[in-house]
Amino acid sequence: MKLTKLFHDFFQSEKSSGLALMACTVISLVLANSGLRDGYLAFWDYHIFEHTLSHWINDGLMAIFFLLVGLELEREVYIGELSSLRHALLPVVAALGGMLVPAGFHFVFNHGTDTQAGAGIPMATDIAFALAVLSLLGNRVPASLKIFLTALAVIDDLGAILVIAIFYTGTLVWMNLLVSLAVFGVLLILNRLKVRNLIPYLAGGIVMWYFMLHSGIHATISGVLLAFAIPFGNGDEKSTSYILQHFLHKPVAFFILPVFALANTAVTLPADWVHSLVEANSLGIFFGLFVGKPLGISVFSYVSARLKLTRLPDDLVIGHVIGAGFLGGIGFTMSIFITLLAFQDPHLINESKIVILLSSVIAGITGFLLLQMFCRTALAGANDE
Image (cartoon, rainbow, N blue to C red):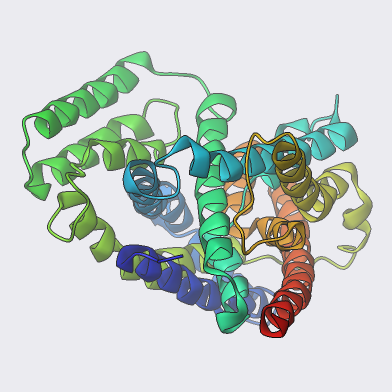
């Protein structure tokens, strides 16, 4: 299966970003639990224009990350894996299972409690981490598996965005929301008028972000809306969407996501942190990511294929899908992001981050070992033929 240049760039940037995220996470955890802890934590709480530095990162810089996710989703819809129903259905069904089943696990453990709002936490997949782990397998990975996991993760992020917009929205300030949507409408009109210059779209995106920030809906949603307002054209290297997407790859991969990791994995491990792992919220997150994700992705994929609603690519077996399902259990960035929206209690947020990190590491290692086995088996079978 031929990989487009931009998809290859996207895969490589996400792979490299995942490796950078791993390094930043380790650095942040070490600093947060060292003699430099107080100064390190205070740095992220430093106020700039009435907001902390971490708030600007989570509400500002992450909007740019969601803009890149939106541009990739737009490309997938127009000319990529999601451009035809036959190709799109498998990752869509898999992503649906990978969102519903983990949320169900968390809901079972936390129904009727103060932590049931965390049901969205295990629904998310970290694209960068998942593709970074997949890249460690080298050339043994079938191209269709790279595309499947990427499409799955992008759809998963779209699902997370919808969950944030619907379930993690506080009191709406309708006037600000309407202004933001009106700006979005103007940008769509510019698109229809075939305005290709990026400046009015970026300027409009900033205005849209500002009013969305003060509307009650999370400001990062404006990044996704802006992505779909930017002209796609025929998707070639001269198109506005391509130019912006190509430009954003490295800043997002090597600055925005690493900074987010540094700011949000500054987790102080309390003396009794092990005991918190058996609390309802922690169990819901762990079983959601480590069990619910691979179970939902693989079962929904297998059943839909058996019913002939979808079809696995010729070079994939269900074992590949199960392995990819475990990689889908690497929640990390998106799971932490939703945690910050779901809970207000700093102690509960800290506990959730700990179990997200542990679950993501265990899921990632399990997925890597399974895929290593299935890719080696598939390669040996091909050589025998």
